[in-house]
Length: 492
Image 1 (cartoon, helix red, strand yellow):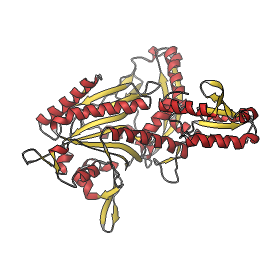
Image 2 (cartoon, rainbow, N blue to C red):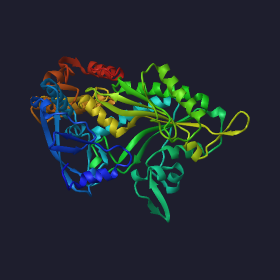
Image 3 (cartoon, rainbow, N blue to C red):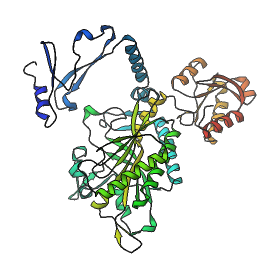
Image 4 (tube, rainbow, N blue to C red):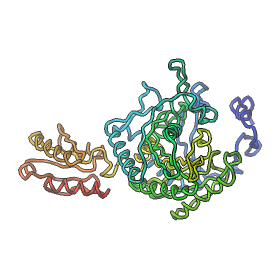
């Protein structure tokens, strides 16, 4: 191995328990590496190698550390595999939410305000509004109560919850307000517990389901920030269920059903599911761990979902189910999680009165379905390559006048569509071919062309981004077809 390599020496110093391995090729090249290497460079197919890019990267993602040069490359067994990989990479680049977010004017990261903080532009905010409305409607139907809680709280709250002991490196520094320390919230759980504690509960009250689209703040190194996927402020679709031991299975099954219902709404139907069991260090007795884990298994079995067991992969406070959704490229994204918690009910001393008038401790279930709105929106952009389905599209129909003589009529039709809850707008000032190209580039699903004959007949000529020319139709027919497609979550 080469001498005077401070970075490798730092890595060596940071390894405490794992075995340290060194691999070599021949007698000339040795490397500190987890390995393995190829046995001989002669086995490499030179036609299946691609140098992809070079980029600067801060050492260990820390902006205060030296800037290094990173070289990206890939190697495959044959040219066909390399071509398939390069096609996949090109498609992933075409779908990159950071580029599409800028091209479609959906969101931005404003460096003047600081990295990792998301600004939702009008079109992106409309999609977020639709996501939130869908989420809230389905939760209320399932018996959840909606909450809104503060973005800050006294630091002592996070001491009770244990976050200051176990999560401090991901939390922002506390602020002094009138000689008391306050903390930006990294989690929503303690707030929901405080609402639970406002009064004594009876066993008859359970299950109690509360939900919040709560914005949290977590410190991330600048080198780890990545578009909407890794940010410093994001909104979790957080919910907590307080229940009795014998209710765990039914509540978990209810969460699985709701998860499937919500994800299907947005076009995701392929999942990878993992059930994580008790780790070596955990709180709570063996009996309750066994009951909770069995309840999770039974709920998954009832649902008919296949899953893998992650032995010892549970949180220290309870077992959990993690679900990854599969996008149009077959990539998997961690979104949904369901966690049984024996820790926070103990830490916050929450109780209820049982049928014998004795105080008992309820079980707490944490769950998120989308994970965070920012990350889920990024996944949606890449899944659809910016071509949102009609019901989700920020602009559903664009009126295009052949000349400005039809502009007044276009505005009348747009207002009629808006009155029926359809997101419509008028675009003019260019020749019609350019207006159409612009609408297609901006992923507008429906275009309604208006010339003199359309004004005379009080109609429009419809063009679909995917279906091409759909022909002449009345405004009423156009409106009814859009409303039906939106209601059925279908194409026009």
